Length: 403
Image (tube, rainbow, N blue to C red; front, side):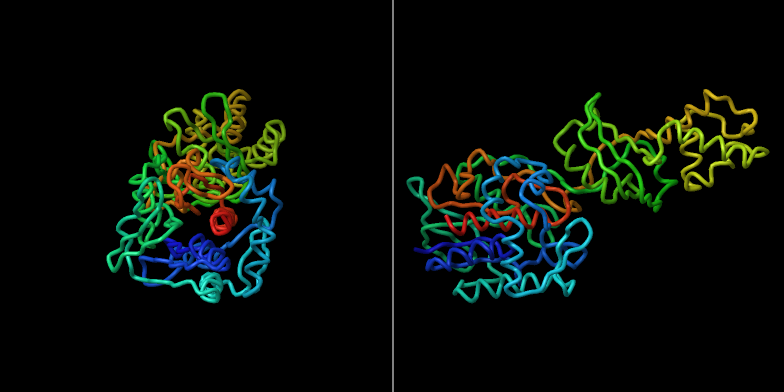
């Protein structure tokens, strides 16, 4: 029994290991000069490999097709993945249950997975491009590359998405799947910065807000809400809360979306109003625009005043209560309007890919072609940051490897 695995990232290495462990002849083909190239840039080079949480919490962080993933993550949950990795490297858990190699080196994770694969005899071929995956009578028969031809019984496609194409993620797996009759959900950016309409953000470029509430609305429905850090950039907004928000709006009409920023989430409107009154009393002889420095970052003050539609040159003693209410409302609900997500080349991961409707959730085998399997980012499943996406690669690979 021969299995060809396409792609040498975590999904490819893990699925190859479990296939070879069962005694199959496994050939892993990687187009790059080394394995796990995308892993090297994850977690800023530290590789946030998983999240030390239970299955239910894990699934709550899956944005797309969590139901499809339910069985796979229960068969190979974060706990088991950590045990697997701990067989060769030491791990540590940080804030938010994020798990990293103790060395803080992503390369150690790749070496760990490569070592497992080599121990069970996986034949690893680097610098080799797959040209086609071939089937006859609805069954896999061979793989053709730029260096050879491989008759086989099974193929596991683990070639990733199309984000960060410099790492080799160029959508090859989509092309192979489509040629074999599969539906490809159009790939879009996930976990990316957001381009905003207007130009107000340019004056705020580089401003980082550490404790801000971020909510995304379409019409009157809230699609996403979180609390934490965000950053104003030359294109709009980014930072942890924003990139998470992007995954909830990447398949919607952005003209229907607005992002609400609560700049003082720890205060109610009444408490914020009382705070502003205290500041006005403290700076009673100053204009409004010069009395908010204790409350807001200096660069943000003129933007808030303009957004509230008030006159910042008025002295505090002459500032009317209805205008103060406008000021409070704007600080608690500063609205920004996206026009697009950042280019998919900049996205942390790809949302979209091979439709889960055409994949057996127990085995990751194609429902259309016998002997064809998928694992990792090539499937239309994605999650938030925190180690969840690498674990999706691991658990789908485990299912495909043990099918």
